[in-house]
Length: 448
Image (cartoon, rainbow, N blue to C red; front, side):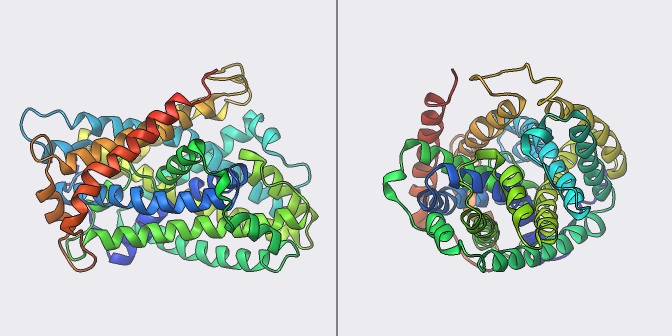
Protein backbone atom coordinates (compact mmCIF):
# COMPACT_ATOMS: atom_id res chain seq x y z
CA UNK A 1 0.00 0.00 0.00
CA UNK A 2 1.15 3.60 -0.58
CA UNK A 3 3.30 4.84 2.33
CA UNK A 4 1.69 8.24 2.40
CA UNK A 5 -1.92 8.15 3.58
CA UNK A 6 -4.35 9.90 1.26
CA UNK A 7 -6.20 12.95 2.59
CA UNK A 8 -9.41 14.74 1.70
CA UNK A 9 -8.88 18.11 0.06
CA UNK A 10 -11.27 20.18 2.17
CA UNK A 11 -13.59 20.26 5.15
CA UNK A 12 -16.56 20.47 2.75
CA UNK A 13 -15.32 17.30 1.09
CA UNK A 14 -15.23 15.53 4.46
CA UNK A 15 -18.72 16.70 5.46
CA UNK A 16 -20.28 15.82 2.10
CA UNK A 17 -18.47 12.49 1.89
CA UNK A 18 -19.45 11.53 5.45
CA UNK A 19 -23.01 12.73 4.85
CA UNK A 20 -23.00 10.80 1.58
CA UNK A 21 -22.07 7.64 3.47
CA UNK A 22 -24.99 8.25 5.84
CA UNK A 23 -27.46 9.39 3.16
CA UNK A 24 -28.71 6.38 1.25
CA UNK A 25 -31.32 3.64 1.28
CA UNK A 26 -31.92 4.27 4.98
CA UNK A 27 -33.18 7.77 4.21
CA UNK A 28 -35.06 7.26 0.98
CA UNK A 29 -36.24 3.65 1.13
CA UNK A 30 -36.51 2.23 4.65
CA UNK A 31 -37.32 5.48 6.50
CA UNK A 32 -40.49 6.36 4.54
CA UNK A 33 -41.95 2.84 4.64
CA UNK A 34 -41.20 2.45 8.34
CA UNK A 35 -42.89 5.78 8.98
CA UNK A 36 -45.88 4.52 7.01
CA UNK A 37 -46.06 1.27 8.97
CA UNK A 38 -45.29 2.72 12.41
CA UNK A 39 -47.88 5.45 12.84
CA UNK A 40 -46.39 8.42 11.01
CA UNK A 41 -45.28 11.34 13.17
CA UNK A 42 -44.73 9.25 16.30
CA UNK A 43 -42.03 7.23 14.56
CA UNK A 44 -40.44 10.37 13.11
CA UNK A 45 -40.15 11.89 16.59
CA UNK A 46 -38.56 8.78 18.11
CA UNK A 47 -36.21 8.45 15.12
CA UNK A 48 -34.95 12.04 15.47
CA UNK A 49 -34.39 11.51 19.21
CA UNK A 50 -32.46 8.28 18.58
CA UNK A 51 -30.27 9.97 15.97
CA UNK A 52 -29.49 12.91 18.26
CA UNK A 53 -29.18 11.19 21.64
CA UNK A 54 -27.66 7.84 20.63
CA UNK A 55 -26.36 8.17 17.08
CA UNK A 56 -24.41 11.39 17.69
CA UNK A 57 -22.00 10.15 20.41
CA UNK A 58 -21.38 6.94 18.48
CA UNK A 59 -20.53 8.87 15.33
CA UNK A 60 -18.13 11.09 17.27
CA UNK A 61 -16.49 7.91 18.59
CA UNK A 62 -16.04 6.49 15.09
CA UNK A 63 -14.53 9.71 13.75
CA UNK A 64 -12.22 9.98 16.78
CA UNK A 65 -10.92 6.43 16.50
CA UNK A 66 -10.27 6.80 12.78
CA UNK A 67 -8.49 10.13 13.13
CA UNK A 68 -6.38 9.04 16.10
CA UNK A 69 -5.29 5.78 14.48
CA UNK A 70 -4.93 7.12 10.94
CA UNK A 71 -6.06 3.68 9.83
CA UNK A 72 -9.05 1.76 8.55
CA UNK A 73 -11.39 -0.02 11.01
CA UNK A 74 -9.57 -3.31 10.55
CA UNK A 75 -6.31 -1.78 11.83
CA UNK A 76 -7.36 1.09 14.08
CA UNK A 77 -8.02 -1.03 17.17
CA UNK A 78 -4.60 -2.65 16.80
CA UNK A 79 -2.98 0.79 16.83
CA UNK A 80 -4.92 2.09 19.83
CA UNK A 81 -5.37 -0.97 22.06
CA UNK A 82 -2.77 -2.11 24.60
CA UNK A 83 -0.64 -5.20 24.13
CA UNK A 84 -2.56 -8.43 24.61
CA UNK A 85 -6.02 -6.91 24.17
CA UNK A 86 -8.52 -8.32 21.67
CA UNK A 87 -10.51 -5.24 20.61
CA UNK A 88 -9.05 -5.58 17.12
CA UNK A 89 -11.29 -8.58 16.50
CA UNK A 90 -14.13 -6.11 16.10
CA UNK A 91 -12.20 -4.53 13.23
CA UNK A 92 -12.50 -7.76 11.27
CA UNK A 93 -16.17 -8.07 12.20
CA UNK A 94 -16.68 -4.49 10.95
CA UNK A 95 -15.12 -5.41 7.62
CA UNK A 96 -17.43 -8.44 7.37
CA UNK A 97 -20.43 -6.26 8.24
CA UNK A 98 -19.54 -3.81 5.47
CA UNK A 99 -19.47 -6.72 3.02
CA UNK A 100 -22.84 -7.94 4.34
CA UNK A 101 -24.27 -4.43 3.91
CA UNK A 102 -23.17 -4.16 0.30
CA UNK A 103 -24.31 -7.69 -0.53
CA UNK A 104 -27.94 -6.56 -0.39
CA UNK A 105 -27.48 -2.79 -0.82
CA UNK A 106 -26.12 -3.02 -4.35
CA UNK A 107 -29.12 -4.95 -5.63
CA UNK A 108 -31.66 -2.46 -4.24
CA UNK A 109 -29.52 0.43 -5.51
CA UNK A 110 -29.64 -1.19 -8.94
CA UNK A 111 -33.44 -0.92 -8.92
CA UNK A 112 -33.13 2.87 -8.96
CA UNK A 113 -31.13 2.72 -12.20
CA UNK A 114 -33.69 0.34 -13.67
CA UNK A 115 -36.67 2.50 -12.66
CA UNK A 116 -34.94 5.67 -13.87
CA UNK A 117 -34.36 4.11 -17.29
CA UNK A 118 -37.97 2.92 -17.43
CA UNK A 119 -39.38 6.34 -16.54
CA UNK A 120 -37.13 8.36 -18.80
CA UNK A 121 -37.98 6.00 -21.65
CA UNK A 122 -41.72 6.24 -20.96
CA UNK A 123 -42.03 2.53 -20.11
CA UNK A 124 -43.04 2.74 -16.45
CA UNK A 125 -46.51 1.19 -16.75
CA UNK A 126 -46.82 -1.98 -14.70
CA UNK A 127 -43.59 -1.50 -12.74
CA UNK A 128 -43.83 -3.12 -9.30
CA UNK A 129 -41.38 -4.15 -6.61
CA UNK A 130 -42.48 -7.80 -6.81
CA UNK A 131 -42.01 -7.97 -10.58
CA UNK A 132 -38.55 -6.44 -10.28
CA UNK A 133 -37.49 -8.55 -7.31
CA UNK A 134 -38.39 -11.80 -9.06
CA UNK A 135 -36.62 -10.93 -12.33
CA UNK A 136 -33.12 -12.47 -12.13
CA UNK A 137 -31.86 -10.76 -15.29
CA UNK A 138 -32.77 -7.27 -14.08
CA UNK A 139 -31.35 -7.93 -10.61
CA UNK A 140 -28.00 -9.26 -11.80
CA UNK A 141 -27.46 -6.69 -14.57
CA UNK A 142 -28.21 -3.62 -12.49
CA UNK A 143 -26.40 -4.96 -9.41
CA UNK A 144 -23.37 -5.31 -11.68
CA UNK A 145 -23.82 -1.72 -12.89
CA UNK A 146 -23.71 -0.46 -9.30
CA UNK A 147 -20.67 -2.55 -8.32
CA UNK A 148 -18.62 -1.76 -11.42
CA UNK A 149 -19.45 1.96 -11.29
CA UNK A 150 -18.59 2.07 -7.60
CA UNK A 151 -15.13 0.59 -7.94
CA UNK A 152 -14.45 2.48 -11.19
CA UNK A 153 -14.81 5.79 -9.32
CA UNK A 154 -12.65 4.54 -6.44
CA UNK A 155 -9.86 3.46 -8.79
CA UNK A 156 -8.79 7.13 -9.03
CA UNK A 157 -7.05 8.73 -6.08
CA UNK A 158 -9.08 10.08 -3.16
CA UNK A 159 -9.40 13.73 -4.22
CA UNK A 160 -9.79 13.19 -7.99
CA UNK A 161 -12.15 10.25 -7.66
CA UNK A 162 -14.29 9.77 -4.58
CA UNK A 163 -14.19 13.31 -3.18
CA UNK A 164 -14.80 15.10 -6.49
CA UNK A 165 -17.62 12.80 -7.64
CA UNK A 166 -19.33 12.88 -4.24
CA UNK A 167 -19.23 16.69 -4.05
CA UNK A 168 -21.01 17.15 -7.38
CA UNK A 169 -23.41 14.28 -6.75
CA UNK A 170 -24.44 15.56 -3.31
CA UNK A 171 -25.02 19.08 -4.62
CA UNK A 172 -27.25 17.71 -7.38
CA UNK A 173 -28.97 15.47 -4.85
CA UNK A 174 -30.01 18.46 -2.72
CA UNK A 175 -31.17 20.41 -5.78
CA UNK A 176 -33.37 17.50 -6.89
CA UNK A 177 -34.58 16.92 -3.33
CA UNK A 178 -35.65 20.54 -2.94
CA UNK A 179 -37.44 20.62 -6.27
CA UNK A 180 -39.33 17.38 -5.60
CA UNK A 181 -40.31 18.51 -2.09
CA UNK A 182 -41.67 21.84 -3.39
CA UNK A 183 -43.65 19.98 -6.06
CA UNK A 184 -45.19 17.62 -3.48
CA UNK A 185 -46.18 20.56 -1.28
CA UNK A 186 -48.28 21.88 -4.17
CA UNK A 187 -50.37 18.68 -4.41
CA UNK A 188 -53.93 18.60 -3.11
CA UNK A 189 -53.16 16.00 -0.43
CA UNK A 190 -50.37 17.96 1.20
CA UNK A 191 -52.36 18.83 4.35
CA UNK A 192 -53.39 15.25 5.08
CA UNK A 193 -49.99 13.85 4.10
CA UNK A 194 -48.00 16.21 6.29
CA UNK A 195 -50.43 15.77 9.18
CA UNK A 196 -49.88 12.00 9.09
CA UNK A 197 -46.14 12.46 8.66
CA UNK A 198 -45.31 15.20 11.13
CA UNK A 199 -48.07 15.18 13.77
CA UNK A 200 -47.15 12.60 16.46
CA UNK A 201 -49.77 10.25 17.85
CA UNK A 202 -48.10 9.22 21.10
CA UNK A 203 -50.38 6.20 21.47
CA UNK A 204 -48.48 4.66 18.52
CA UNK A 205 -45.19 4.56 20.47
CA UNK A 206 -44.38 1.11 21.87
CA UNK A 207 -41.42 -1.24 22.21
CA UNK A 208 -41.44 -2.14 18.53
CA UNK A 209 -41.43 1.55 17.60
CA UNK A 210 -38.30 2.09 19.73
CA UNK A 211 -36.52 -0.90 18.19
CA UNK A 212 -37.44 0.11 14.65
CA UNK A 213 -36.45 3.74 15.23
CA UNK A 214 -33.07 2.90 16.74
CA UNK A 215 -32.25 0.33 14.06
CA UNK A 216 -33.38 2.84 11.45
CA UNK A 217 -31.16 5.58 12.88
CA UNK A 218 -28.13 3.26 12.93
CA UNK A 219 -28.80 2.05 9.39
CA UNK A 220 -29.45 5.56 8.11
CA UNK A 221 -26.34 7.02 9.79
CA UNK A 222 -24.12 4.06 8.80
CA UNK A 223 -22.70 3.76 12.31
CA UNK A 224 -21.50 0.80 14.34
CA UNK A 225 -19.57 -0.98 11.56
CA UNK A 226 -16.68 1.43 11.00
CA UNK A 227 -18.11 3.07 7.89
CA UNK A 228 -17.55 6.52 9.40
CA UNK A 229 -14.20 5.76 11.02
CA UNK A 230 -12.43 5.59 7.68
CA UNK A 231 -13.32 9.21 6.90
CA UNK A 232 -12.03 10.29 10.29
CA UNK A 233 -8.67 8.86 9.20
CA UNK A 234 -8.65 11.07 6.09
CA UNK A 235 -9.08 14.45 7.81
CA UNK A 236 -6.82 16.80 9.73
CA UNK A 237 -7.13 18.02 13.30
CA UNK A 238 -8.32 21.57 12.67
CA UNK A 239 -11.97 20.87 13.62
CA UNK A 240 -13.43 19.27 16.75
CA UNK A 241 -15.47 16.18 15.93
CA UNK A 242 -18.72 16.87 17.81
CA UNK A 243 -19.56 19.79 15.54
CA UNK A 244 -18.63 17.84 12.42
CA UNK A 245 -20.84 14.95 13.54
CA UNK A 246 -23.74 17.35 14.15
CA UNK A 247 -23.36 18.65 10.59
CA UNK A 248 -23.39 15.14 9.12
CA UNK A 249 -26.40 14.01 11.16
CA UNK A 250 -28.28 17.23 10.36
CA UNK A 251 -27.80 16.70 6.62
CA UNK A 252 -28.73 13.03 6.90
CA UNK A 253 -31.89 13.78 8.90
CA UNK A 254 -32.85 16.60 6.53
CA UNK A 255 -32.76 14.20 3.57
CA UNK A 256 -34.85 11.62 5.44
CA UNK A 257 -37.45 14.22 6.43
CA UNK A 258 -37.64 15.71 2.94
CA UNK A 259 -38.00 12.22 1.43
CA UNK A 260 -41.14 11.82 3.52
CA UNK A 261 -42.39 15.25 2.44
CA UNK A 262 -42.02 14.08 -1.16
CA UNK A 263 -43.79 10.76 -0.65
CA UNK A 264 -46.69 11.19 1.81
CA UNK A 265 -48.50 14.17 0.22
CA UNK A 266 -48.35 12.25 -3.07
CA UNK A 267 -49.86 9.16 -1.42
CA UNK A 268 -52.77 11.12 0.07
CA UNK A 269 -53.32 13.05 -3.16
CA UNK A 270 -53.83 9.86 -5.14
CA UNK A 271 -55.65 7.89 -2.46
CA UNK A 272 -52.87 5.36 -1.79
CA UNK A 273 -52.30 3.97 1.70
CA UNK A 274 -48.82 4.82 3.02
CA UNK A 275 -48.35 1.51 4.87
CA UNK A 276 -47.19 -0.52 1.86
CA UNK A 277 -43.91 -1.46 3.57
CA UNK A 278 -40.76 -2.04 1.48
CA UNK A 279 -42.85 -1.69 -1.69
CA UNK A 280 -43.78 1.91 -0.88
CA UNK A 281 -40.95 3.51 -2.82
CA UNK A 282 -41.15 1.27 -5.87
CA UNK A 283 -44.72 0.08 -6.39
CA UNK A 284 -46.66 2.87 -4.67
CA UNK A 285 -44.64 5.82 -5.96
CA UNK A 286 -44.61 4.35 -9.46
CA UNK A 287 -48.42 4.27 -9.38
CA UNK A 288 -48.42 7.87 -8.18
CA UNK A 289 -46.15 9.10 -10.96
CA UNK A 290 -48.02 7.11 -13.60
CA UNK A 291 -51.26 8.86 -12.55
CA UNK A 292 -49.71 12.29 -12.20
CA UNK A 293 -49.68 14.96 -14.89
CA UNK A 294 -46.08 15.19 -16.01
CA UNK A 295 -45.40 12.00 -14.08
CA UNK A 296 -42.79 10.78 -16.54
CA UNK A 297 -40.62 13.83 -15.82
CA UNK A 298 -41.21 13.84 -12.05
CA UNK A 299 -40.70 10.08 -11.85
CA UNK A 300 -37.41 10.35 -13.75
CA UNK A 301 -36.20 13.11 -11.43
CA UNK A 302 -37.34 11.17 -8.37
CA UNK A 303 -35.39 8.04 -9.27
CA UNK A 304 -32.38 10.08 -10.38
CA UNK A 305 -32.38 11.54 -6.86
CA UNK A 306 -32.60 8.00 -5.49
CA UNK A 307 -29.58 6.99 -7.61
CA UNK A 308 -27.51 9.81 -6.14
CA UNK A 309 -28.61 8.94 -2.59
CA UNK A 310 -27.84 5.23 -2.97
CA UNK A 311 -24.54 5.65 -4.83
CA UNK A 312 -23.18 8.11 -2.26
CA UNK A 313 -23.32 5.28 0.30
CA UNK A 314 -22.04 2.67 -2.15
CA UNK A 315 -18.96 4.80 -2.89
CA UNK A 316 -18.33 5.44 0.80
CA UNK A 317 -18.72 1.85 2.02
CA UNK A 318 -16.72 0.49 -0.91
CA UNK A 319 -13.96 2.93 0.09
CA UNK A 320 -14.09 1.56 3.64
CA UNK A 321 -13.81 -2.02 2.38
CA UNK A 322 -11.03 -1.05 -0.03
CA UNK A 323 -9.04 0.74 2.70
CA UNK A 324 -9.32 -2.25 5.04
CA UNK A 325 -8.24 -4.75 2.40
CA UNK A 326 -5.37 -2.55 1.20
CA UNK A 327 -4.02 -2.27 4.73
CA UNK A 328 -4.17 -6.05 5.10
CA UNK A 329 -2.61 -6.85 1.72
CA UNK A 330 -0.51 -3.86 0.65
CA UNK A 331 -2.31 -3.69 -2.70
CA UNK A 332 -2.38 -0.49 -4.74
CA UNK A 333 -5.69 1.34 -5.10
CA UNK A 334 -6.24 0.14 -8.68
CA UNK A 335 -5.34 -3.49 -7.95
CA UNK A 336 -7.60 -3.52 -4.91
CA UNK A 337 -10.49 -2.08 -6.93
CA UNK A 338 -10.19 -4.74 -9.66
CA UNK A 339 -10.00 -7.69 -7.25
CA UNK A 340 -12.70 -6.40 -4.92
CA UNK A 341 -14.98 -5.60 -7.85
CA UNK A 342 -14.81 -9.22 -9.00
CA UNK A 343 -15.26 -10.52 -5.45
CA UNK A 344 -18.23 -8.23 -4.80
CA UNK A 345 -19.96 -9.26 -8.03
CA UNK A 346 -19.80 -12.86 -6.83
CA UNK A 347 -20.82 -12.13 -3.24
CA UNK A 348 -23.82 -10.07 -4.31
CA UNK A 349 -25.31 -12.83 -6.46
CA UNK A 350 -27.31 -14.52 -3.65
CA UNK A 351 -29.26 -11.31 -3.03
CA UNK A 352 -29.65 -10.59 -6.74
CA UNK A 353 -31.12 -14.07 -7.17
CA UNK A 354 -32.99 -14.09 -3.86
CA UNK A 355 -36.40 -13.43 -5.42
CA UNK A 356 -36.04 -15.99 -8.19
CA UNK A 357 -33.47 -18.80 -8.18
CA UNK A 358 -33.12 -18.71 -4.37
CA UNK A 359 -36.75 -17.94 -3.57
CA UNK A 360 -36.98 -21.30 -1.78
CA UNK A 361 -34.68 -20.02 0.99
CA UNK A 362 -36.73 -19.05 4.08
CA UNK A 363 -34.42 -18.01 6.95
CA UNK A 364 -37.07 -16.89 9.45
CA UNK A 365 -40.86 -16.68 9.31
CA UNK A 366 -42.83 -17.71 6.25
CA UNK A 367 -42.43 -15.09 3.54
CA UNK A 368 -38.90 -14.07 4.50
CA UNK A 369 -35.93 -14.51 2.19
CA UNK A 370 -32.33 -13.62 1.46
CA UNK A 371 -32.95 -9.88 1.88
CA UNK A 372 -34.34 -10.40 5.39
CA UNK A 373 -31.26 -12.40 6.39
CA UNK A 374 -28.81 -9.70 5.25
CA UNK A 375 -30.84 -6.93 6.90
CA UNK A 376 -30.94 -8.96 10.13
CA UNK A 377 -27.15 -9.51 10.10
CA UNK A 378 -26.38 -5.82 9.53
CA UNK A 379 -29.18 -3.84 11.15
CA UNK A 380 -30.29 -6.07 14.00
CA UNK A 381 -26.91 -7.57 14.95
CA UNK A 382 -23.79 -5.87 13.59
CA UNK A 383 -24.64 -2.19 14.05
CA UNK A 384 -26.01 -2.29 17.64
CA UNK A 385 -23.30 -4.70 18.85
CA UNK A 386 -20.60 -2.72 17.05
CA UNK A 387 -21.85 0.51 18.59
CA UNK A 388 -21.65 -0.96 22.10
CA UNK A 389 -18.11 -2.23 21.47
CA UNK A 390 -17.03 1.15 20.12
CA UNK A 391 -18.41 3.14 23.06
CA UNK A 392 -16.93 0.75 25.63
CA UNK A 393 -13.53 0.96 23.93
CA UNK A 394 -13.67 4.77 23.95
CA UNK A 395 -14.77 4.97 27.59
CA UNK A 396 -12.94 2.20 29.42
CA UNK A 397 -9.63 3.44 30.84
CA UNK A 398 -8.71 0.05 32.26
CA UNK A 399 -9.71 -2.18 29.36
CA UNK A 400 -9.88 0.08 26.31
CA UNK A 401 -8.58 3.29 24.78
CA UNK A 402 -9.99 5.39 27.62
CA UNK A 403 -12.11 8.49 28.07
CA UNK A 404 -9.16 10.88 28.36
CA UNK A 405 -7.70 9.75 25.01
CA UNK A 406 -11.12 9.85 23.38
CA UNK A 407 -11.86 13.37 24.63
CA UNK A 408 -8.42 14.66 23.67
CA UNK A 409 -8.93 13.47 20.10
CA UNK A 410 -12.59 14.42 19.75
CA UNK A 411 -12.04 17.93 21.12
CA UNK A 412 -8.92 18.75 19.09
CA UNK A 413 -9.60 21.71 16.80
CA UNK A 414 -12.20 24.44 16.55
CA UNK A 415 -15.92 23.92 17.08
CA UNK A 416 -18.29 22.19 19.50
CA UNK A 417 -16.59 20.25 22.29
CA UNK A 418 -17.64 17.30 24.40
CA UNK A 419 -18.01 18.50 27.99
CA UNK A 420 -17.04 16.69 31.20
CA UNK A 421 -20.67 16.37 32.28
CA UNK A 422 -21.37 14.26 29.18
CA UNK A 423 -19.08 11.45 30.36
CA UNK A 424 -21.67 9.58 32.43
CA UNK A 425 -24.24 9.81 29.66
CA UNK A 426 -21.92 8.66 26.86
CA UNK A 427 -20.14 5.93 28.84
CA UNK A 428 -23.11 4.43 30.67
CA UNK A 429 -26.48 5.62 29.39
CA UNK A 430 -25.79 5.28 25.65
CA UNK A 431 -24.52 1.66 25.74
CA UNK A 432 -27.32 0.75 28.19
CA UNK A 433 -29.96 2.14 25.81
CA UNK A 434 -28.45 0.33 22.83
CA UNK A 435 -28.08 -2.94 24.76
CA UNK A 436 -31.66 -2.82 26.05
CA UNK A 437 -33.18 -2.13 22.64
CA UNK A 438 -30.90 -4.71 21.02
CA UNK A 439 -31.99 -7.46 23.45
CA UNK A 440 -35.63 -6.40 23.23
CA UNK A 441 -35.39 -6.49 19.45
CA UNK A 442 -33.96 -10.02 19.48
CA UNK A 443 -36.66 -11.26 21.87
CA UNK A 444 -39.49 -9.78 19.81
CA UNK A 445 -37.96 -10.58 16.42
CA UNK A 446 -40.27 -12.59 14.13
CA UNK A 447 -38.38 -15.87 14.30
CA UNK A 448 -41.37 -18.09 13.69
